[in-house]
Length: 216
Image (cartoon, rainbow, N blue to C red; front, side, top):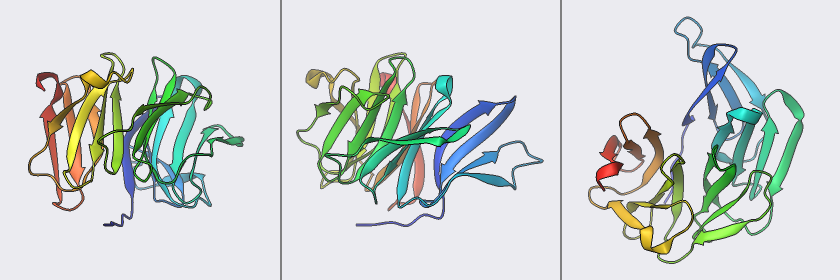
Protein backbone atom coordinates (compact mmCIF):
# COMPACT_ATOMS: atom_id res chain seq x y z
CA UNK A 1 0.00 0.00 0.00
CA UNK A 2 1.73 3.14 -1.12
CA UNK A 3 1.30 6.50 -2.73
CA UNK A 4 3.49 9.21 -4.16
CA UNK A 5 3.02 12.94 -3.98
CA UNK A 6 4.80 15.80 -5.69
CA UNK A 7 3.82 18.13 -2.88
CA UNK A 8 2.52 17.18 0.53
CA UNK A 9 0.56 20.25 1.54
CA UNK A 10 0.22 20.51 5.29
CA UNK A 11 -2.58 23.08 5.33
CA UNK A 12 -0.44 25.19 7.61
CA UNK A 13 -0.82 28.96 7.55
CA UNK A 14 2.14 30.93 8.83
CA UNK A 15 1.68 34.60 9.55
CA UNK A 16 4.93 36.53 9.46
CA UNK A 17 5.69 40.12 8.51
CA UNK A 18 2.00 40.69 7.78
CA UNK A 19 1.96 38.06 5.02
CA UNK A 20 0.01 34.82 4.85
CA UNK A 21 2.40 32.03 3.94
CA UNK A 22 2.27 28.27 3.55
CA UNK A 23 4.84 25.75 4.73
CA UNK A 24 4.96 22.51 2.75
CA UNK A 25 7.17 19.52 2.12
CA UNK A 26 8.03 17.67 -1.08
CA UNK A 27 9.68 14.94 1.01
CA UNK A 28 13.23 16.17 0.37
CA UNK A 29 12.75 19.86 1.25
CA UNK A 30 10.59 22.10 3.39
CA UNK A 31 9.58 25.25 1.53
CA UNK A 32 7.76 28.48 2.31
CA UNK A 33 5.26 29.84 -0.20
CA UNK A 34 3.72 33.31 -0.20
CA UNK A 35 -0.05 32.96 -0.45
CA UNK A 36 -0.55 36.48 -1.81
CA UNK A 37 -1.98 36.25 -5.37
CA UNK A 38 0.80 38.30 -6.95
CA UNK A 39 3.57 36.31 -5.26
CA UNK A 40 2.29 32.75 -5.05
CA UNK A 41 4.37 31.43 -7.96
CA UNK A 42 7.57 31.58 -5.96
CA UNK A 43 8.67 29.60 -2.92
CA UNK A 44 11.93 29.46 -1.02
CA UNK A 45 13.72 26.54 0.57
CA UNK A 46 13.72 26.61 4.37
CA UNK A 47 15.29 23.18 4.99
CA UNK A 48 16.90 20.92 2.39
CA UNK A 49 18.64 17.54 2.09
CA UNK A 50 15.91 15.70 3.97
CA UNK A 51 15.36 11.95 3.69
CA UNK A 52 11.59 11.47 3.59
CA UNK A 53 9.45 14.08 5.33
CA UNK A 54 5.74 13.30 5.33
CA UNK A 55 4.36 15.69 7.91
CA UNK A 56 5.25 18.97 9.57
CA UNK A 57 3.70 21.57 11.84
CA UNK A 58 4.56 25.07 13.04
CA UNK A 59 4.59 26.56 16.54
CA UNK A 60 4.03 30.25 15.95
CA UNK A 61 4.92 31.57 19.43
CA UNK A 62 8.50 30.32 19.15
CA UNK A 63 8.68 30.28 15.32
CA UNK A 64 9.54 26.56 15.38
CA UNK A 65 9.05 24.10 12.53
CA UNK A 66 8.52 20.49 13.61
CA UNK A 67 8.76 17.62 11.14
CA UNK A 68 8.78 13.82 11.08
CA UNK A 69 11.39 12.18 8.83
CA UNK A 70 10.40 8.60 8.03
CA UNK A 71 13.75 7.93 6.34
CA UNK A 72 15.73 8.88 9.44
CA UNK A 73 13.08 7.51 11.82
CA UNK A 74 13.13 10.67 13.90
CA UNK A 75 11.34 13.92 14.72
CA UNK A 76 13.22 17.20 14.47
CA UNK A 77 12.63 20.91 14.94
CA UNK A 78 14.20 24.18 13.85
CA UNK A 79 13.60 27.87 14.38
CA UNK A 80 12.45 29.17 11.01
CA UNK A 81 14.87 32.11 11.32
CA UNK A 82 17.90 30.12 12.52
CA UNK A 83 19.07 27.16 10.38
CA UNK A 84 21.71 26.30 12.99
CA UNK A 85 18.96 25.43 15.49
CA UNK A 86 18.05 22.26 13.52
CA UNK A 87 17.86 19.53 16.16
CA UNK A 88 16.63 15.96 16.63
CA UNK A 89 14.25 15.64 19.60
CA UNK A 90 12.83 12.11 19.15
CA UNK A 91 15.21 9.52 17.69
CA UNK A 92 14.36 6.23 19.43
CA UNK A 93 11.31 4.00 19.30
CA UNK A 94 10.18 5.34 15.93
CA UNK A 95 9.80 3.36 12.71
CA UNK A 96 7.35 5.25 10.52
CA UNK A 97 6.25 8.54 12.12
CA UNK A 98 3.42 9.39 9.75
CA UNK A 99 1.55 12.11 11.60
CA UNK A 100 2.55 15.08 13.73
CA UNK A 101 0.77 18.03 15.36
CA UNK A 102 1.68 20.81 17.80
CA UNK A 103 -0.56 21.71 20.74
CA UNK A 104 0.10 25.45 20.93
CA UNK A 105 -1.92 25.83 24.14
CA UNK A 106 -0.56 22.97 26.22
CA UNK A 107 2.89 23.20 24.59
CA UNK A 108 2.89 19.52 23.63
CA UNK A 109 3.83 17.54 20.54
CA UNK A 110 1.63 14.68 19.32
CA UNK A 111 2.55 12.09 16.69
CA UNK A 112 1.50 8.74 15.24
CA UNK A 113 3.59 5.82 13.99
CA UNK A 114 1.99 3.50 11.44
CA UNK A 115 4.49 0.69 12.15
CA UNK A 116 4.53 0.68 15.95
CA UNK A 117 0.79 1.44 15.87
CA UNK A 118 1.06 4.02 18.60
CA UNK A 119 -0.06 7.58 19.21
CA UNK A 120 2.30 9.44 21.52
CA UNK A 121 2.83 12.83 23.14
CA UNK A 122 5.79 14.71 24.60
CA UNK A 123 6.83 18.19 25.58
CA UNK A 124 7.89 20.39 22.67
CA UNK A 125 11.55 19.54 23.36
CA UNK A 126 10.86 15.80 23.24
CA UNK A 127 10.97 15.28 27.00
CA UNK A 128 8.36 13.46 29.10
CA UNK A 129 7.31 11.18 26.27
CA UNK A 130 4.14 9.12 26.79
CA UNK A 131 2.12 6.61 24.76
CA UNK A 132 -1.54 7.66 24.69
CA UNK A 133 -3.17 5.04 22.47
CA UNK A 134 -1.79 1.65 21.43
CA UNK A 135 -4.70 -0.82 21.23
CA UNK A 136 -6.93 -1.36 18.19
CA UNK A 137 -4.71 0.80 15.99
CA UNK A 138 -3.80 -0.38 12.50
CA UNK A 139 -1.61 2.08 10.57
CA UNK A 140 -2.54 5.39 12.26
CA UNK A 141 -1.40 8.29 10.14
CA UNK A 142 -2.41 11.96 10.04
CA UNK A 143 -3.20 13.79 13.31
CA UNK A 144 -5.07 17.04 13.97
CA UNK A 145 -5.77 18.82 17.25
CA UNK A 146 -8.41 21.14 18.67
CA UNK A 147 -6.62 22.34 21.84
CA UNK A 148 -9.41 24.78 22.74
CA UNK A 149 -11.78 21.82 23.20
CA UNK A 150 -9.19 19.21 24.20
CA UNK A 151 -9.87 16.91 21.23
CA UNK A 152 -7.52 15.07 18.92
CA UNK A 153 -8.29 13.29 15.64
CA UNK A 154 -6.39 10.75 13.58
CA UNK A 155 -6.80 8.65 10.45
CA UNK A 156 -6.29 4.89 10.27
CA UNK A 157 -5.37 3.04 7.07
CA UNK A 158 -5.80 -0.51 8.39
CA UNK A 159 -8.16 -3.36 7.55
CA UNK A 160 -11.07 -1.21 8.75
CA UNK A 161 -10.10 2.34 7.70
CA UNK A 162 -11.57 5.12 9.81
CA UNK A 163 -11.13 8.52 11.39
CA UNK A 164 -11.17 8.60 15.17
CA UNK A 165 -11.67 11.23 17.85
CA UNK A 166 -10.41 11.16 21.44
CA UNK A 167 -9.45 13.37 24.34
CA UNK A 168 -5.95 14.84 24.12
CA UNK A 169 -5.24 13.57 27.63
CA UNK A 170 -5.41 9.96 26.44
CA UNK A 171 -8.69 9.03 28.14
CA UNK A 172 -9.48 5.61 26.65
CA UNK A 173 -13.23 6.01 27.23
CA UNK A 174 -13.36 9.19 25.13
CA UNK A 175 -12.27 7.41 21.97
CA UNK A 176 -14.85 7.10 19.18
CA UNK A 177 -14.79 6.51 15.41
CA UNK A 178 -16.46 9.44 13.64
CA UNK A 179 -16.01 8.30 10.01
CA UNK A 180 -16.11 4.61 9.07
CA UNK A 181 -17.87 4.37 5.71
CA UNK A 182 -16.78 5.27 2.20
CA UNK A 183 -13.10 5.67 3.05
CA UNK A 184 -10.00 3.64 2.14
CA UNK A 185 -6.79 5.61 2.72
CA UNK A 186 -7.86 8.67 4.76
CA UNK A 187 -5.03 11.14 5.11
CA UNK A 188 -4.14 14.82 5.33
CA UNK A 189 -6.69 15.87 7.95
CA UNK A 190 -7.18 19.53 8.85
CA UNK A 191 -9.49 21.46 11.17
CA UNK A 192 -11.72 24.44 10.37
CA UNK A 193 -11.93 25.91 13.88
CA UNK A 194 -14.69 28.39 13.00
CA UNK A 195 -17.18 25.92 11.55
CA UNK A 196 -16.08 22.95 13.71
CA UNK A 197 -15.48 20.76 10.68
CA UNK A 198 -12.80 18.16 10.03
CA UNK A 199 -11.49 17.89 6.46
CA UNK A 200 -9.59 14.95 4.99
CA UNK A 201 -8.34 13.55 1.72
CA UNK A 202 -8.55 9.95 0.57
CA UNK A 203 -5.46 8.90 -1.38
CA UNK A 204 -7.15 5.84 -2.89
CA UNK A 205 -10.67 7.10 -3.53
CA UNK A 206 -9.30 10.47 -4.65
CA UNK A 207 -11.65 12.90 -2.95
CA UNK A 208 -11.72 15.62 -0.28
CA UNK A 209 -14.51 15.52 2.30
CA UNK A 210 -15.51 17.00 5.64
CA UNK A 211 -17.58 16.19 8.71
CA UNK A 212 -19.03 18.20 11.60
CA UNK A 213 -16.95 16.82 14.46
CA UNK A 214 -19.00 18.53 17.19
CA UNK A 215 -21.98 16.32 16.38
CA UNK A 216 -20.00 13.09 16.44
